[in-house]
Amino acid sequence: MFNFNKGLFKMGKFYFLIALIALNYSFASAELAESRDSLRAFKTPSITISTNRAEERRSPVPFAQITVSEVERKHTLKDLPMMLSELPSILAFSESGGGVGYSNLTMRGFNQRRIAVLVNGVPQNDPEDHNMYWINFPDIASSVDNIQVQRGAGLSNFGFPAIGGSINLETSNFTVQPGATLETGVGFQQFGDNYEQNTSKYSIQASSGIIDDKYAVYARLSRINSFGYRDVSWARLDGYFLGFARFDGNLTTQINIFGGPFADGLAYNGLPKSYIKDKNLRRNNYNFWMYDSTGENVSWITVRRKQEIENFSQPHYEMLNDWKITDNVTLKSTLFFYSGKGFYDFDGTGWMDKNNFRLTPENGFPADVKDPENPIIRAFVYNRQGGWIPRLQLQHDNGTLTLGGELRIHRSEHWGKIRYADNLPANFNPDYKFYSYNGERDIFSFFAREEHNLSDNLILTGEIQTVLHSYRITNEKAGINYTKYINIDGDTVGNGGDLFNIHYFFVNPRLGINYNLDDKSNIYSFVAYTSREPRMKNLYDASSSYTGKKPLFKGEKMPDGSVRYDFSQP
Image (cartoon, rainbow, N blue to C red; front, top):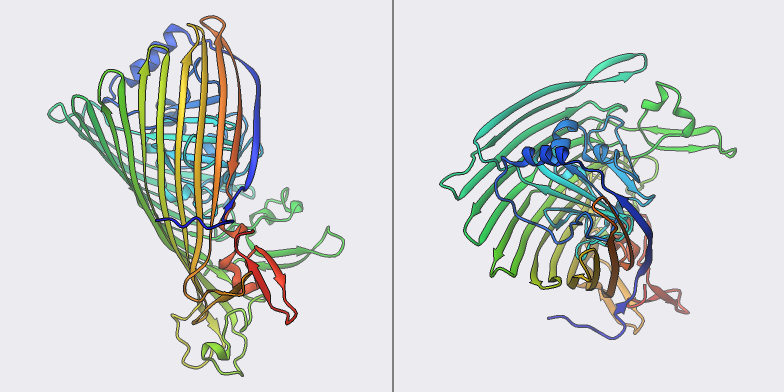
């Protein structure tokens, strides 16, 4: 049951995207088409896992594809963004400098928070901060069958808003013939004037082939090691993928389990621009640095400590179904669940004191407690997300009507502890959490798309999506005490319950047209209105509350100096 209180429906940031008329030429020869077909001839029957995929000469969106043969030729051990950077409008960089670990990309100048990423039609961006963490499924490229990149609003009618574009990955390594592949290799990178071995990969894959004309199983295990290019930016990535498929007459079912635990050394801060051309300086890894008053000379640095590490694991579980009810009616269903649990340890030296750590009398500590020295802070997160995405496709004389929905439920737990420090209070409890809270996100969406053949060469595509987002932060504590705030009505909120519960409702229409000039060229155009909900920290950065962060809602300062918040008005 949902309580839609007055004032809690808010319109967030929105974007109006217009694609200029684009002219597309296709020069695929019959020989090339035959070659590509032969590469896929040994695949089992496939599941069309997403209604978000564009079709050449039908869909009015700019897109590019990487086929399985291209993936097999290009992929070794580097993160997927490195391969995607070969496509138009995409740039990628590696935090470690070695292409293994944390890698990020931009599309059309937009960062990953504005790029929708789907694996088998399942949204992958983090529901709270919108970022995309490719490291959560190491070596996924080894199990990819096809990658499609759409630029702009595209055909993303569920999942996260595609402002910069969308990236759709399809996995399937089921083959008709059984077989196994063992792969091992090492990589070298230039350090100064020398080349050194700094990466390695070990992988085994196996496919059962078709069993009893009905079943297929595929499995992969892999490990990728990297010392990193920058100091203490190592990574150890363990990846796994297990797929099971059943092919019935009118029903196809696929179950996938994939992910991989990983550990790495933190390297997320950049370096001064002047370091780029110096072969030694550019390998440094600082957790903090700053310029002097001139803005040209580096006046202060803090070197990254070896104890600043991360451990995380996010297994993915999904069940995909294609049910051909009649010749003209098909039901597609995606059920999924994934959970991520882990921590990262970072240096608190020089900027954290006893008050930040909440080592205060109200939390049971003596008044004469001293500031901890050389602290290492552990930040923990535990995410769970599950959902269902059904789509009903209705074929008619003039095209296809698709009706669908999306239900996603996200829950998270966050806390921070002192992992290590000198000068701690006597009998300090190492399990003491100086901040903790729970985050909650619910997403409900309905969409409809009509792809209408106005003539043999002219296709009109119209679409509308309605989506409701809800945000909550609850159970927030500062030390051992629940946090409390006063709302605009003078009532206490928080105190172990919801700090806020706010909703965003959007309507996103799209309209496009494609005209095939001849058998080699086509022209298309589209217009789209896309809305994007805020990140959780745009409402309240609860993970940084110990540094003085407050809820980012409209407030009224009272004569006694207190603030009353209107938690319906961010």
